Image (cartoon, rainbow, N blue to C red; front, top):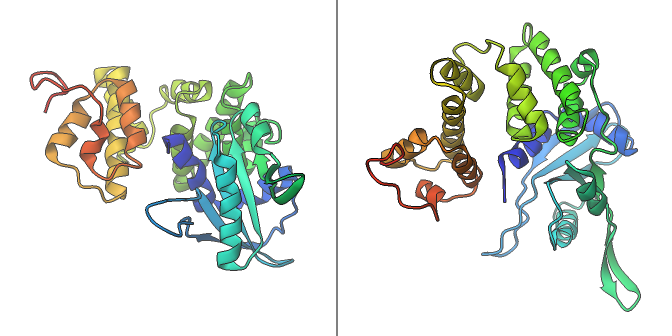
Length: 313
């Protein structure tokens, strides 16, 4: 299932490719400082109705060697059979583009990272036809960044540090460091600060680090007039309380995802979303908003809502 954290994870690679150099550094794979990075279609489907999509595929053009493809997957837990999809991605992309392919799997916990490292064999009777060795970035090799000045020098790596260590004992210090750095950077470069605030808000979710982020930002008046989820939550929270503010922010996020995907939203659906105050239900709707084909499908399996209830149409 595609979640908001999953979405935020691969967006940062697509939109902020400067993260690649330090990430390759911690993985022990050299990458020239000067390299071109271009997004490649993530669709690796050959026949319908089977769909296979990689989170992100980048074409890397290093200044000191041949181009290669980097397929990036985010993984929140062990999923049976996922390793065979990874093998398929590598083989398909190499056949389609005629370039070497590396697979990077980004994990948030050690057990998932240990599993994702493989290797994964395809073969029988002591004969191996194919072996997959993913590169893995996770808590054991992404640094713990608890100094605001260090975070400011490499925001992308600091953001991934916050995500990889979102449940660790250091999560409060990591979150405080990158938040302090972003508030300072926003004075001169609001676009960059806003991007990373959005990434952290989406990706950290309800982890301990995400809770710390909301705690810190609840005391800061920021982003006036931008209409962001954070601004909505802050302004409405002053008037209506924290729960209502969080619900308003969730509703805005759900509607924004549907809009970006080009999914029409009938007035009855919009009203049901904006009037709901059940945060668990809205979290589910936010996850569904990234995959549904119709806005009404957000409510699949939900109980019927009485028309006179706060959520009723």
